[in-house]
Length: 197
Image (tube, rainbow, N blue to C red; front, side, top):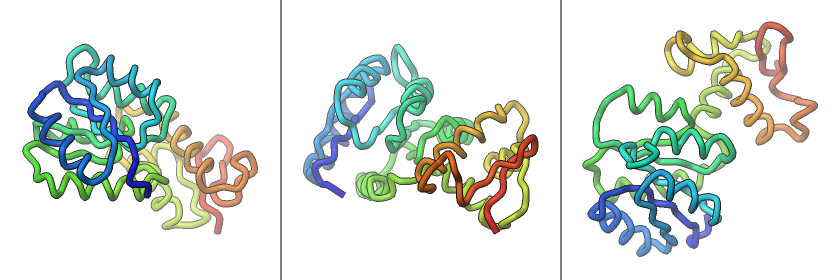
């Protein structure tokens, strides 16, 4: 993992920016700061960002929306910062593609170790990893999209089944030699997916 990784730190509070920028720069990272969601999206387009630290409560465009827009075009690791310990925000953040979340207040040591771990593990996102684990746990078994949604999020109500197709596509791009001719994750037409036996 290159120490010169660039981290986009998105938080509207100066105290948080100072608190987090200093230890990251001391660890050798380059930190780019954004104070609101619009600025974050603009900077992400202009710079080569290796990891995003994203506060949930932001002016202009909130953290969940920023996360969704980043995920639409990038696999960059995202850590959500949330001031509330609410399960809902956590689940929503992970569902929209965040890789990790950390609830304020948190220890700087824990924050630094989460950042380093994510930069090392930047291959599979949390959801991709869980999806792969589910499929591979029972090779040859055909899983419907609904079963996969339930295994990831506990229920499938209000969930878009196409979400699964998107995550499967990303998984194949990372795992398969040729994503168009998969050797591991097979599509079962009209039903769902299975892992090779």
